[in-house]
Image 1: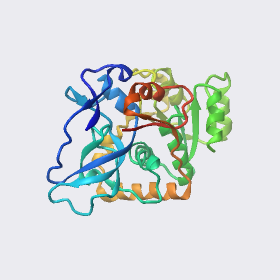
Image 2 (image 1 turned 90 degrees about the vertical axis):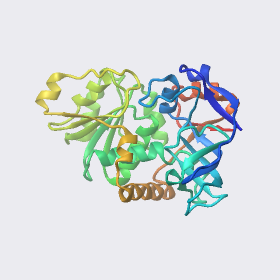
Image 3 (image 1 turned 180 degrees about the vertical axis):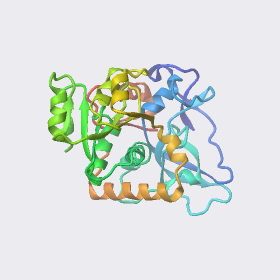
Length: 325
């Protein structure tokens, strides 16, 4: 079978290659899945660079979220069948014509859900709804997030609205305001405007901002913290701009602020099964009702993986970059 591999850590647009490797047989409790379509996430590309929290042995396959069709069942697998459409968001090495997954890591996909939506269903939407749950928010609360035009930012805004939570989104350029408005997402402020802080205060009407999500790092971390009310919580989700956070000690001290890290995979694996099922059910409901949208920017073949990796970080990207064999 054909699989995307890398023999060294580095820029994905340079080190990814298409290799012919044997297709593995599923072991006990495992399933072999024929890939239909896979999603590219930032963390997939960071893993290829060798800069993520998980570092595979080389040579390595890659990719973590996909939708496919069950091709073979391992010993002891029940509740699944050959030919069934499934999605997974925690299976390493899915950028291949076939991949092996733990049966427990697969989610059956309703026929009403498209391949493109199913391939995005688990990682980012589940991270977004888990993030909201992590902040222990109440209906009517106000939060602020940067990188509001990123995938998770868009999802948090939509999911929060469905839950009755108010979100102010920060973007780094004015064009981002219009991009999000086109998707029906409001309360967006561009930090390249000199009066952006006053715009945030006007949107909240003076209500306390109880939590903030920082996905950027650098001075952007301090910008989010500065907007929080007393006893507010700054949740660190990512570091797209810098791995170093620039925050004011005065804001931390005088606001009595709390700074917490959020790593979706850690939170998810420690979550009770019934809680996980309830959150996934909530996501399915929002998707079917149209309250949650998962757009696709472009789809590339394995042969064009270098271009796909570059496209993932293109400014102004609205939807996800996808891969097909």
